[in-house]
Image 1 (cartoon, protein in one colour):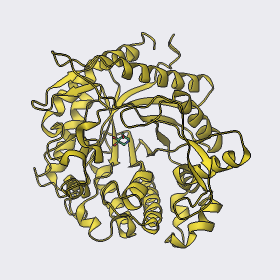
Image 2: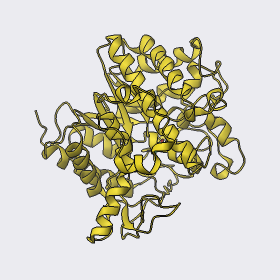
Image 3: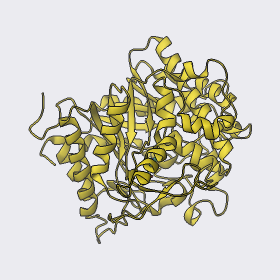
Image 4: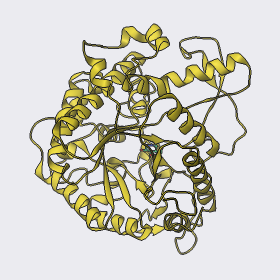
Length: 446
Ligand code: IFM
């Protein structure tokens, strides 16, 4: 059944967060060190010297967060699990107190009628694994499999949607090529090795989930892009196609059994630590695909060089920008969903993240009147509705983010929340966009 606003009755309406961005309590209950602890505590890596040590203190205040989700009437919550809470050294027996924390979260969600969507990995790799090479080391894929199996055994009775990796593109290219995220390496070859091991990790975990006989669904969350050509000139159109190789096709082609894209293999095949059988492990379509969408980029052709191995570069645009400097292009979301659904045989799509950072200014009561965020959400939800009307199998939407949190290398300066976190008291104060989203969920229209 379709509601009068064009969304199906059974549409998933949720919010998303991630462990290191909200939990804090980094030294409590036996949690080990993650690469983000190390990175954030390295001077100069994060704006303002911010760290996730306290973050939103959700480790202690998760019930307040869940009360907010209840007030929204959200029917799902996508959160991630901190691997170093479960396996402080990245391997071996699970830390019971880590499991206990997520038991409390999962059970409180279920009691509130909110379906927990468990994101196994959202960037906080145990430092002990990074010390042995991190995602550049094949062993990490097998350690991820062990971690995932612990989670399946312990939570599989209550979790119906597991996803493996969040935005592996960021892990590989921001972490190992651009160096702006943990572990801060700057070597393209390492990034390509990481790509392969991330895909392998996903494939191993997905296979184990299927073999476990558990009744839920298993997916992966990507931040794919369908860059648009800056002009209608053939060279720009071809350049935009090449831009999608790294952002999108090196992930989706192998997952859907097509192997790595030809041009990628021509240019960088020597970097890929392929072993026999790897592509078979990877090539198993996920039950659902999570798409994180924030912006669309325009691409122009440039001469191939070390900086531009695909002969493409970002072009100037006219769009208004967010506090991150990202273009606001709601129709780009529809174009992306069309591209994904039209190119790969995806069964179920979810927008697993969408949202916006603005320089919110609270009034004297601490209330944020964020009409700009409401406009952003409205226009992107329109794109979702249009996608559904076209027959694209979009089944749900998770807003990023429930609350202002640690925005990685930008620290707390960039705020994506529909709930403001008072920087001193950590009180949760819903912004106007919170009530907008509540009304959308309730069916009052966009
Ligand atoms: O905060 C991040 C999140 O961790 C991953 N996706 C993009 C968000 C906004 O930058």
